[in-house]
Length: 172
Image 1: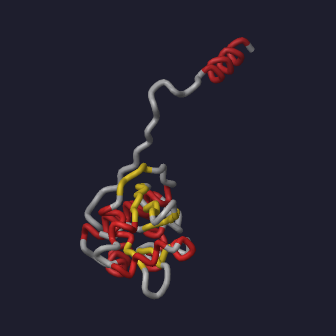
Image 2: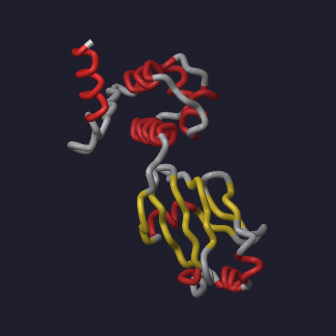
Image 3: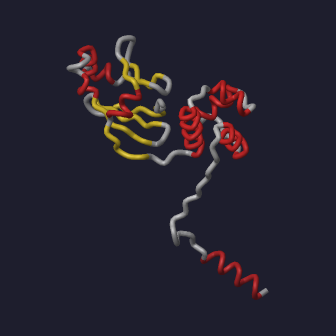
């Protein structure tokens, strides 16, 4: 499975941070590749390094001759944190991972679910807001099940306002 990059930050020297769709943020210093790929040494030129841009969701490109796969950064980079991901990105990651695990294409998933392939693509990119019913159709087509979790820290809900409101109603 490919890990989709959604954000790139160029740091000091030849270091960069990439945020992936699953919320994982990886730091990678391009200088570790200079001996293996001498052409990358050109990235020591700060002006050139700062031109780096995400190439779709699968890599970083500086020019026609200099690029880097996002998957390498995901696998070999240092994890610096895990960012909170928005629900669209979480469902996107879940659908893409489940489809990849099933070993089928978006077109095949579309045929199994009756959902247009372009809509499957939007869901997997995190640009669509699928309903729970749509996610359930996808899960069933993959012989899986949909699971939704709401995590609430213990004793963090302030009930004071609700209790005072209830008491006022009782006295009236």
